[in-house]
Length: 233
Image 1 (cartoon, rainbow, N blue to C red):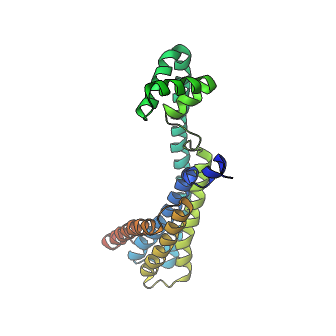
Image 2 (cartoon, rainbow, N blue to C red):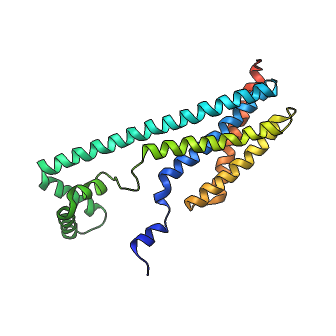
């Protein structure tokens, strides 16, 4: 028998917060470290310098990604909490006005005025704040972000993504290294796009094309900078 919980489990929107952070981190790790390595390689330096630069970039990038994600999601959470507290005060100070606003929201969604008023009244009697938070503010349990979860997902996925091009650097020869990096990175990005699309229930082909095109642009520009400036260590 199909229940509400089973029905919701068959959808993927509840995965959106952590999946977004994980995909962003892994994508950034792969592209950032590959682009950094390609740019340095294009400047004609030794393999030891390339390794040192990419390891430093991997550590700094993972920490920066985790910290940045935590700060940004915490700011979002603080804003949501402030709005909820403001809504709670308004419900205490002007309950009739808030009831009318809730009914108007349901009318705009297609309910008849009498039905909208009845729905608003019954939901208010059950849990007024929950109804307003969900339908007026648009905040739900699935949309609320978790700063710690987002930070850990981003930092760990950046590290996992950044390790892949680092392994390429370790095992391929210095000659034509940038071409090896580009080729393997495209494969890594395609696999990431496919996994992310599969996990999120979206189209795999579109995800692969999107992620590889932008990855190619980033690595191409990094190589160009390396050739133009020819930095020596």
